[in-house]
Length: 151
Image (cartoon, rainbow, N blue to C red):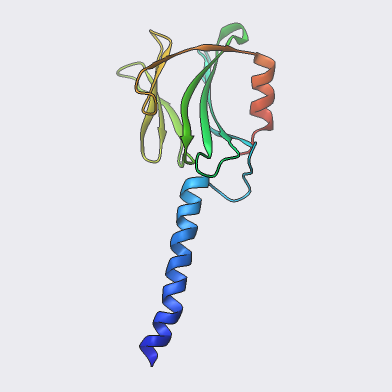
């Protein structure tokens, strides 16, 4: 009798916990709605460009995020690079400079997801697996995007 009651409680609890974990992993923290932009990481330097990783929540639950890297360089020249599309939330996203190679590493979910290669001005992303060239972006729009993004 005790085992039956225990299974009756533990089974639905375990299933609910599993579904919640899948939801959190895939869609990210609660409170992010379709159309929201999330500042996932930033790297600012005194003499060089600043980098921002922005996740855009799409309206599709099966393809919830598009992730873009923005580089703001001298004279407020802005470049954008697509990092991922149709992707889950980028947990633990960070940007750091690799002093040996001179590349900028974008990490998410515990691994390097993309690399910015300054000498070629391209990004190599795991999602695309080919070099992604810079696209020009408007400084005012990017500043607005950064200031309005969550986090």
